[in-house]
Length: 85
Image (cartoon, rainbow, N blue to C red; front, side, top):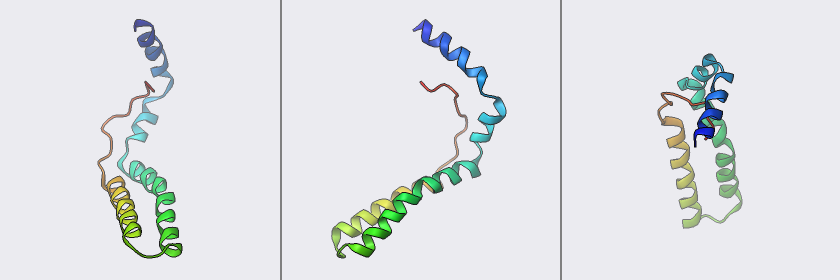
């Protein structure tokens, strides 16, 4: 366990504080979330165009809408850690 902490302590100074601060900006967090939602929205549109309309399509679209909505309106992180573990 002490070895892992020593490795993590040596890895932390490699990333500058400005980069870590940049990752925690609210507009950047929402931009990354919006880009991550593009494939989900595309698949929902594709299903709407090519499937028969019914309960499975409605529930799939509703699930995608809930996921996209929560990703866009979530709070930005207060701090970002450079430690991957």
